[in-house]
Length: 163
Image (tube, rainbow, N blue to C red; front, side, top):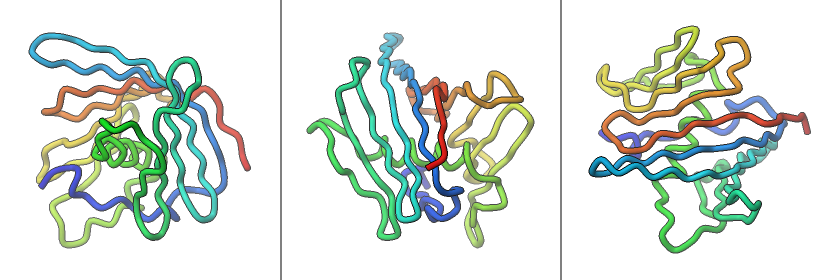
């Protein structure tokens, strides 16, 4: 099973209500060529949904998606937008923000592991998504990797405020 097939946790597992801003450095490695993309994002958690908006470095909106009780919805995106990226980003958000006990894997081969400096989402004991923290006290800076995929996200939380 792939990470795209994993159901997202219920939005209600995230503590409400807050918003944050993050810088994202995406590194894609293909055929020994490395492509780096700098983006910004805004997250908002309200009683009814989790919303993510992705901006280019100049602050122009590139894509936005939301998760509510009905599921994951792409609100706006360029034609080449891969919806799997939204799923992968949301799984990383949940892995970062909720404890392992909040994941419900009953009857499946999925599990999570947590150490002081990392968290991982596993399928049959193989890491599918891993977060490594630069500073284990603040967890503001983190690297998200998807083993076997050419994608790495370096994320820094710039601000977080209660709503």
